[in-house]
Image (cartoon, rainbow, N blue to C red):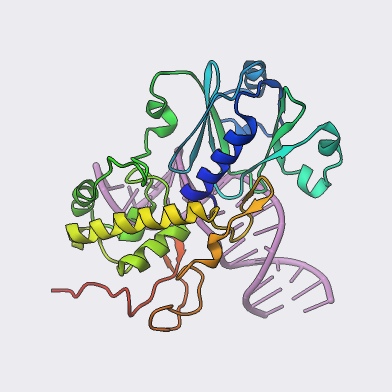
Length: 283
DNA sequence: AAGTTCCCCTGTTAGC
DNA sequence: TGCTAACAGGGGAACT
């Protein structure tokens, strides 16, 4: 499922492919895809706009156009495809075509389409403002994990006054943005912290470990092209990090070989080694 | 008021 | 084998 590293790969791919392309025509086939705009107005507003800039915040994609910022979120299974021409679009297998919810015809004849089997993804359109990170879409989105101004001290301050497990904390995008379920498990394993540990029981040193592990793992996953567990792909590529996962969806601990079993923490399927990631001893 | 549960969706898989 | 129910999970609304 697209987390920070997957979204980064999508953004870089689109920047390389369609930067400065103008939009000739737009058609939206699923109105709920649009968060804050009617289909008709959305389709009208985007004609003649160019894809100027490509940014990312957490798991959000930001397309800077001439007069608007277009904010996208792929949620579970959303993906963009670039089709070479009209014929390719017409010849698409019905199994794929039925899940295409938006189409953007570009000036060079290619067509950018948005496909999303589960229809969870969303697009929001805003008139361009100076600081896109102040847009309503980002009201509840904290600093990106890879934002160099984010410090362990900040996490410690937020965590120490909350009573909630660290897995939920890492998944909370208003705390830090970009980590999803898969990487949360990997980060906790590398930090040797149980997902059940309460944030108020963690030391500053542990938050330092967590932040360091978060950055290392997300960077590495990004270089590998992200993780493809179910369906993630972009530009015809799959990610490669699924082969590097150490704990998530694995059979045994790579360090002590303890058999692992899935459990639900923070409402998510969770893998952790009971030996290598012990709970702190209660006093 | 912060933390938890539910809901949106559909394809895949587990279980009877 | 064929059907149904459970499951997958990001984020926001609704609930406790």
